[in-house]
Length: 228
Image (cartoon, rainbow, N blue to C red; front, side):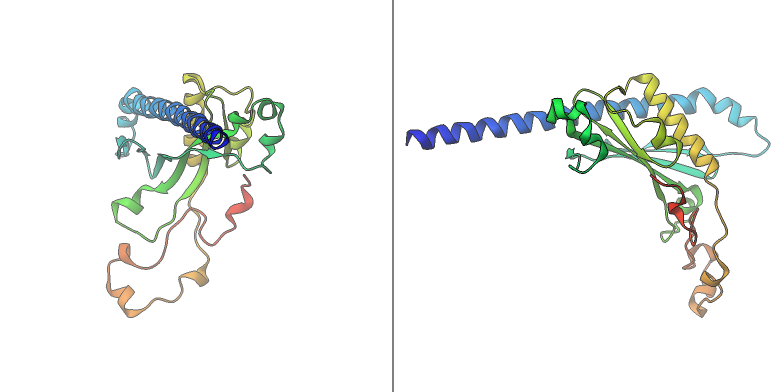
């Protein structure tokens, strides 16, 4: 009975340790997500007047979809920021797992994740449910508020120093601006002719917005030209 009791104590301690670690990571990630909300809202508020001076009316809005999601709409694009409610461990074969930062303390490899998705604004405006969006970045946050980013082009390249990257307000602003800049340079391309040359009678009789012709920025082209 004594050995069983000792085993139970060790198991309970393991549950407490792992659970508290995950709660700490979750809270840290939630705080960071709150900073992204605040900075995105501030970005819109601070520049709304300048947008109104454009030659044409341009959408420029911040809106929340709940605790774990918000949208930033600018021009023809929408960025959706989504925080996953779970905590993940970085895979063993990931490059950051080879760093001394992780080897010195394995608990640093447990992270919350914030995703950034890019969609066309018209996809939501006209309810084109077949349209495609793209994850342009995902931000990993650990209990020490350190982060790294997997992302397209400059977004991922700028933020890959896990040990030295702390998510303070300046870092949040930089990630936000980089995401907007990348989106502006990530243009809509015409899909190959063969993908749209045939339509059914039903499709042509419905409105163009409801046609089963999906719209995406790189539909029909090799999106992996922009490597993570």
